[in-house]
Amino acid sequence: IIFLCVKPNDVEKVLREISSEVEGKIVISTAATIPLQFYKQVAPKTKFVRTMPNIAALVQESFTAYCCDETLSSEEKEKVKQILDAMGVSEEVEEKYMDAITALSGSGPGYISIIIEGLMYAGLKVGLPRDLALYSSAQAVLGTGKLILETKEHPAKIKDMVTTPGGTTIEAIFELEGSQIRQALMKAVEEATKKCEKIREKILGTK
Image (cartoon, rainbow, N blue to C red; front, side, top):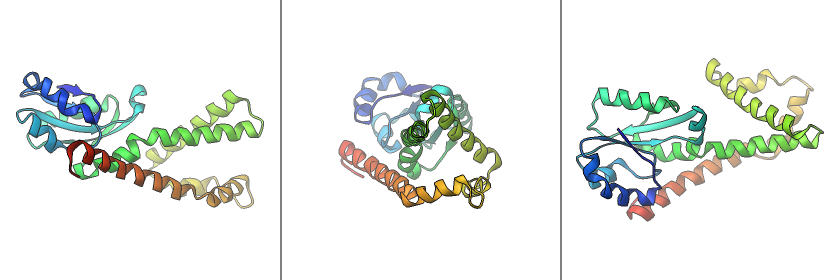
């Protein structure tokens, strides 16, 4: 198994350079937007896995979506999953979802970092030391994510669990609703998904 970790516009060049070395082997690519069909056209005797991890792989907490070409056996797919799970968690998905996963999860740490930074500055504004503001903000995001994953509860239920009549949380939520934070996040992911399509069209000349 070989990892191909290059930018999308370098995939064809690099793959042609190593085509003889990867023949008959499994190549796991982390390049965004490039479809399996393109890999097979360049190196038809190679087995390919298209993946989208995120930077949280650095601490073994990535969500990695992946799809395999039809030539991989069940045993080979299991081996691929074991490798990807070492970076966090992984899930095989239909290839048609890969652009959306790239926009949501692949780019997700960028969005969450902005949210954590915003919370940190909020802490500074109300008088917290910088280190305490950052640590408590990051831990709140980490803990909430873990709570949702382990309880399998809808985020709205978790929100309601900490919202009491006339309390501090509902006051803060009232302000957040006015900022249209949900719409901003939805538009961000939608535009990032469209960008995937544009990048692919530029590189391959097709959508």
